[in-house]
Each structure stands twice: as structure tokens, then as C-alpha cells.
Image (cartoon, rainbow over the protein chains, first blue to last red):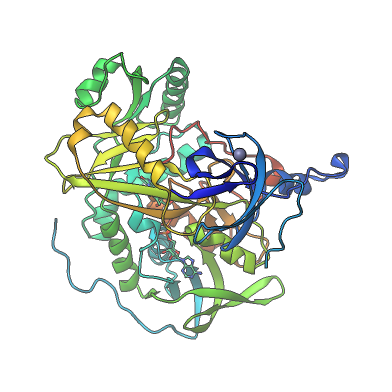
Length: 92
Length: 401
Ligand SMILES: Cc1cc2nc3c(=O)[nH]c(=O)nc-3n(C[C@H](O)[C@H](O)[C@H](O)COP(=O)(O)OP(=O)(O)OC[C@H]3O[C@@H](n4cnc5c(N)ncnc54)[C@H](O)[C@@H]3O)c2cc1C
Ligand SMILES: [Zn+2]
């Protein structure tokens, strides 16, 4: 089990957290303008990189707040956590 | 355990070019190669495997085979597969230890009961063997299940598919490999596909760690790693790769006569031929390519298993491991053509594709040979996520697998 750093509470055990999938997937700015393919992209298609991934986590059994993290999907190591207001790191 | 010969397949150097290149030497890739040769006479085929033959999910899964899915589309392909399993040993001329010992899918709440009965009726309409059984019958089929009413998730009954079963996964892979190799298919291990050589809307070759290989058609059967390859093609697929773990106990006397699965407490158990209890749970929540998972998943799964099977309390856990499974939003696979003229996709089987091995090999081979989907994989297109014709088996087909 690994420790995950909540931006508000500090390091806590993994079991306290809930995974929320890819971060920075914005709700369409003009929903009415989207065609079926664009809706499908928004609803169903997510990146699935082997390596660094920016994703959402919630500290479900703690402060219950959502935050973002950058994590390596091969080592599972968290390389950065940041609040939803902060801009994400650029993944190379 | 039957003895097997030393060499089951040839290990040739790759040729410069093949009619069909299959990426991924797991069960699906090997079965596809076998049926390409056997059903369609297409033998100028290579199966390229980055690791060792069938060392991916094929070697890591808990081998549960059943066809009691809810939707007609799923019933079609999984039942086609189950029928092939029933004749596979003869077809391959190789033991696969297919044991039709049945599966119980337990219901623990009134809603579980209703959903289960609905699924039994749907299965029967599709000609699939299915029964609803009450707790006392559950006890007769599998005496070690805790059917007392004072546990947190009491067993209110179960669906039962008697034709469900398990098979020895390695032997299945080796059986397909041997037949494909005999037919002239080149099985090339230690050969990772790293990129594609494209000309317009066609892929004319693959770049591999053993050099470039030209091809007439390319079929992807690379399970949890599909996105890594489709990213190279600029093709977006609605897949998330997750770690999925399994574990086995030490060898025990036969105690567990059937397969038992529970959606609510999320554990599934069967007893392997040698005697290990083979167990699994759900996927780890996060994306992962690491072929290992988190320990707390195992802890929870063990707690569930011991409550359902009190006799397990003294069993020792021997080994745990993980695979990478490719999960789609509707928990159904993606099989068929792609926007490329000659690239075919087989992925998204998630946690339940072992049971489909012969069935998908059969229909995928048909799709490649005819450049058109087989009736059983026709519903599982990539564009169903755009058209909205999902085959939503999440929660419908009982727990994963
Ligand atoms: C723990 C666990 C339990 C499971 N339990 C069940 C079960 O009880 N019942 C069931 O029906 N299903 C089960 N599954 C799911 C099942 O194992 C998979 O759905 C199925 O094996 C996928 O098809 P495959 O056999 O071809 O995949 P794999 O065996 O994973 O084959 C894909 C192959 O592609 C290779 N590959 C990937 N990328 C490349 C590349 N770039 N170049 C060359 N080769 C590449 C990989 O090395 C791998 O060998 C389970 C899975 C896991 C992990
Ligand atoms: Zn917190």
C-alpha cells in the first residue's frame, strides 16, 4: 500500500482515496455544437498512456476534497499532487 | 497432469513479409492464427509476441469459462465460444483439462435476486443453460458455501450454469500454438512491435525489435497494451488499462466442486486440478501497466472469501500476481475493423476474455479473412461508442469474468 499526499491533509494511506480517472477533461464549452463523435470523445474516450498520467483523486475517507495528481502508470509512483485550481504539469 | 512433448512449436526467424501479422501471442492471437489456417487456409501468418508465448493475461487469469451474460450480443459470442471449448480438446488433439463443473453466481440482496432471475430467463431465451437455485440447493451444489442467514451478505440464492467450467490455460495456449505452427504459422517470441509503417490508409509493415516486417494485414490482439499500439496509429480507443490480481492457496484435497462467484462481496473461487484454490477480485481502481496491484485489494478479497467459505480460514496463501486488463466503458469487447483499410482490432475484453479465446479466434479470423465482421463480433464495433449501440454488460452479466 502506498502513501498518497493529499494537498490539504498530507500523506495518507491509499485506502483513504478514491480514483477519478483522467484529469483536465473539460465539459464542452458549447455543448449544443458537438456532433456525435465529439460527444463520444467527451463521454467515453480517455488517454491511456504507459508512463506519466494526470488524473483526479479524492480524499474520500479524509477531507473529501478532489485534487489532481501526476502518476506513473508503470511504477504507480506519484510524481506530483496539485489542487484543481492549479495548472497541470506538462507531461512529456 | 499429462506429459507433454519437449517441443510444441517451431521457433523460426521472422520472414521479410507475411500476409497477416498478428500482434500479441496470447490466447487470442494464437487462436486467431489457428482458425485462420484451419477455417480459411491462410497460413502465411506471423504471431509476434514481445515476451514469451502466452505469458501475458493468458498465463495470469483464473480460467473461468461461462456464457451466462445478459445481452443477446454477448450470449452470441460467449456461447459460440463455450460450444467450441466443448470440442476443443479433440480439435487441437491436445489435452486442455476442460472441466465443466458449473458456476454459481450468488445473490445477496433482493435486487441481486431479481437481476439474477432476469438473467436466467434471458439466458434461456438464448438457448443457454441456466437455473435459479435456492440457498439449500446452493448448499447441495457446493457444500462449503456459508448459507447461514446471520452473515453480513447472506446467500439468498444463485444462478447456476452447469456447462460453465475451467481449463488449464497454459495447455490451451500450447495446444493452439502447436496446431498453428504445424499449419505453417510462424510464432515469434521476444519480438515487440514498436511502430507501424504506413502508406496512406494502409499499414504496410510493422517495426519490431527484430527488424521491419512487411504485411498484407495487421491484427492487434495485444490485450492490456493495445493503447500503446493504437496511439502509434493515431487511433483513439475507449480503453483504460488496469491491474487485475489473482492468487492461489497451497494444494488442498478436493473441497470445492464448482465455481462460485459473488458480485456483492466481490470474490470468485474455483479449485484447480492440482488442488489450489484459485481466487480473484475486481480490478485495481487506477490505470496501470505494472502487472502488479495493491495489497488492500487482496485483503478485502480474502475477508470476503473467508466469510463465504469459513473453511478457507486456515488455508495458506501461496502466490499472488497481476495482469493488465483493458476495460471499456460498457464492459464489452471491441472486435472488428478500424478506420485503416487493413488493420483489425481485438481488445477490450477486460477481465473476462479467457473464456472467449476459441470464440474470438474463430470470429476474428473470419473478420480478417473476409475483411468483414463475423455475425458474432459484428455488434462489437469501435463505432458503437459514437452511435450509442452499447452492449452494456457492466453489472448485467454478474461480476467480471
Ligand atoms: C488476474 C486475471 C484474472 C482473469 N480471470 C479471467 C477468468 O477467470 N475468465 C476469463 O474469461 N478471463 C479472465 N481474465 C481476462 C483474460 O485473461 C483476458 O481477457 C484475455 O487473456 C485477453 O486476451 P489474450 O489472452 O490474447 O491476452 P494476453 O495473454 O495478455 O495477450 C496479449 C499479448 O500481447 C503481447 N503484446 C502486447 N504488446 C505487444 C507488442 N507491442 N508487440 C508484441 N506483443 C505484444 C503481450 O505480451 C501478451 O502476451 C483474467 C485476467 C487477469 C489478469
Ligand atoms: Zn485530504
